[in-house]
Image: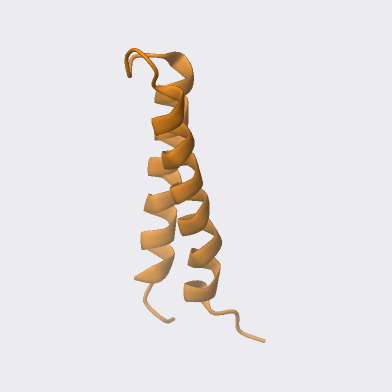
Length: 59
């Protein structure tokens, strides 16, 4: 059975939104906190993975 990569992109997109929200909430005084940068990096990774799965060519 073939799995649809577009379906698998949805959880990554939702996690990217969650990590973006958490990064915004953790930036109290400045954005140069370790936690803010780590959450933003996780969000970027999740959005990148979601876009890669969304636009994956069918093989």
